[in-house]
Image (cartoon, rainbow, N blue to C red; front, top):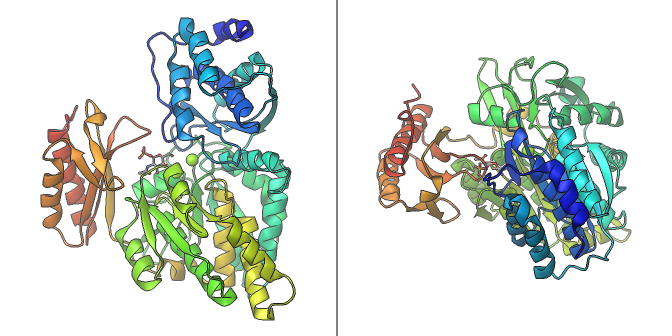
Length: 543
Ligand SMILES: CC(=O)N[C@H]1[C@@H](OP(=O)(O)O)O[C@H](CO)[C@@H](O)[C@@H]1O
Ligand SMILES: [Mg+2]
């Protein structure tokens, strides 16, 4: 194998000796200055993956909701889904190979995967608005060029837009036209078709304030805006013209802090939403007349969407099974509402989109959302075909109308990955069609007060979990302690797990009151600190 060009160009992207990183739930993610060699090597890996799958492979440079100084990279598989797990290991090995080992590690991957280097390859590259992203994406390109692959640089795109174009490229355009403009066309057409049948709502109901997290989502919403007028009137805040990316704004900030972002002008009752830094997550919120903040997170979104789809399925009378997939972070009230009131089966998957995505693929219609607002709806081939058939002549007018709506949802939702823009349009359409205000939507069920905390320990791997991360099996005594603490509160639940993206242990607690949720989260944090090797200051009480 002639890998001279690879090794020669690698000299421009030297790996700092001794640095090790892992391809985790969100790809590689760390301080931007440590990532140049990783980017180059992910360019190489994308080419190999493209040759292996004989498809276009995506590479997205982003660190999502993390601080502006961070960056990261993820590979996108042929149908627009996350990189398969077996290749995560190749990615980790390749990123961690010292310069003198690079050739061997590459050759091993080629051999192990039986890759024919003569096969054509193509890589699609995208990046977010971080100052470091441009140079890092050039490093990816260097890797792609070193292996003499074709590529297309899509430049500034949201993560879901890159997933979309990859899927389009590999389905000969059946999923849509593989351009950002094609994405706007497809979504805005589906949105317009869907809301066509809605009652004529007033201007107030058509207004939506968006916090763009000072990131790529803001840029792309601006581009898309003209396609959505006059149905939707968008007011954009944190559009990146002055504030810092994700700083005191964005979906993650709003969800974790349970308060509005800075930089947004909120009037009582007004519907607002926040994107994260790469626009694959969204949460909604409003403040009431008493200035109280109300958050409508991924759980409320999953409930709204699955209730809407279930209603349409009843109308079309199709025997398609639908399931909702959540994680341990889902609010207990949402799970109870879905199971007991909506009679929809609910499943709990491990944190990380790929786990939810895989579980959701088991249903004809799988709705999945992480509580933090990342999610989408997957329709099986059977479901799509059956729905499409009903839109043709033959069925009654009412059935045809409902089937048409389902088909519009299929076209509007980004089935490759959670997508803030697409999810926003689905939600807005449902609110129009059902004539629902954000308050009415919020009233579907009441969230249990909850709290999320982080604890720093010397090695977070000492914590091992089971039961979709809801219980710990290591270190000894921790689960017993959590069980004991939970017993002393009403409607309480708590769990801890090592984060897959940060060097921390995450603690979650919910209970009947905010005071109790806070107290429980603090007590569990102390237990983690004492039993799992806490470092630094003791976790402090919240009040
Ligand atoms: C509690 C929480 O929000 N966890 C997030 C976070 O994972 P952790 O493994 O908890 O760090 O980042 C993931 C990637 O963006 C996202 O999928 C997940 O939901
Ligand atoms: Mg994100």
